[in-house]
Length: 200
Image (tube, rainbow, N blue to C red; front, side):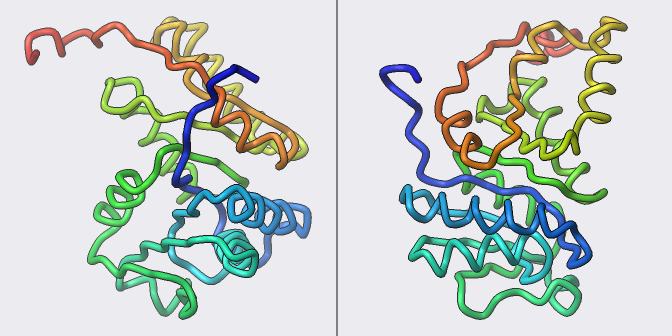
């Protein structure tokens, strides 16, 4: 570990809202919520009380940690926000994602569905455009994210994104390695994407 690991006050967790998720994934979410609490790092999440989201938030709260949920009003009935944690209700998915982004110093990606995938791709697109330099780490339990990593590699092989893209995220297999990975990731600079030079 470097002599000066990155200070993280808040970590945003992207993960599934499904209660049908594997017990292994649910246990990992609970473990990560507890780890954040014990390390004094606030958990920022999508505001739901179900699935991995709810498991992580409840574990963080139970361990005495700070939690911020952000949820759009139209999802409150479906995702059932927790009444015992701080929750901000917004009007749209765009507002939700922007607030979660702004409130976080880093991003932890746990197993999730299409919503998680959308959040991840947007986050990495913004990183490619130089809109942020916040660390991104995947919890790749049992190779869950391997198909996505294969797509990333395919795009790299086709030279559609620069080689530096491979260094803006990291993957770990064990939940206890997730926070240390976020704290020690190097900052990678991109060249200005083609077409943006004229805008600067």
